[in-house]
Image 1 (cartoon, rainbow, N blue to C red):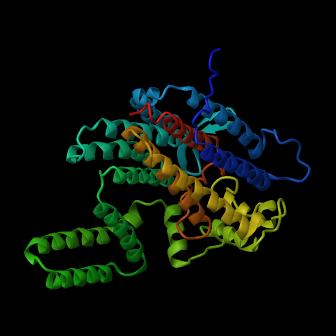
Image 2 (image 1 turned 60 degrees about the vertical axis):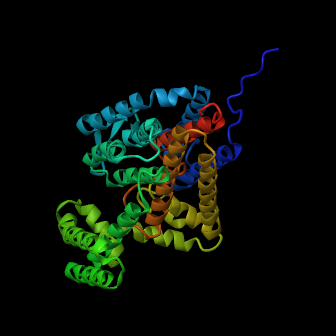
Image 3 (image 1 turned 135 degrees about the horizontal axis):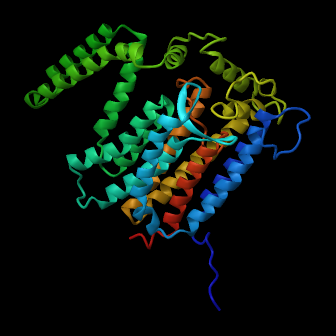
Length: 420
């Protein structure tokens, strides 16, 4: 008797269940945000929840198809997929449609496809393929530059689409490189320092910040041991940081688009123009705050039902959760994401091959970035940069791309012994 073929054999059931829970929660909240009294049918393609059902069903089919593939497919075709993704990113700049001042979509019938979402999947494959083929355990400068280019090339093309939010998502891949030793903790510290200095420079005079940096540099030179070895480096670092601080104002005024500047000002200066740039954030806080501990009940949210919040099925879907499910429901969803992330870390650490581990950490990094930034946007912790809440927000490209990444990693993990 022939053994039965089971595509779910050895697939991690915990991750699979969490995936199904999140997309189900997502659909119910999209339905709530889209709900109109007396509307007919859940399969009405004229509504977001109707179209989302099509995306969910098709993404599940795509996930099942991924599980049927041989694991060698992913490493063998990684560069072809990556190259195809780059071509699509170029094509959408030339012939794509513009939505909300961003040229990032292809319009196909009543659906919009966003190539940058699939570029994340392609970048994860290419990065895993390149790093796994580096023979030395200690990567050199050339290896690091090539890995950086793999990440920055699609990011640059997305930037040309004027999609700042998605561009920033590509920075998450550097966390995967950190796990493999391609980036030191010092580099991550400097990146964090750059973010802090940007915020401080926006809040205070740039010369005050430079003066503080100079004082810290002098203090370290005077009181640290081995002054000869470190003094030159500290002075060079000070000059670099001073130049960066001095450039912040120019960057803000001349490079960022008007709506991005307005959103940063709303966040940093509490300059809440409730009828302009601060409208979304203001209404979002009202919705989440009004939910209280237990929420107003499903389909009972006033902010949600009266459409006070733009983009509520996409970037601001968490507002629906906060208003109708309350603090308890919101905390449960955050807990599901954290549980999923922790479980994925466990799976990534048990991989036998570098390819699988790099791909796993790329998935983890992108998922964490989306989750943290999206929720941070809705409660006013970070500027509104327009990225969806993974598996919950409306959007076919988003759910497809995340499903492809998640199921590819599940397949690699299920066959981890064969990947040695």
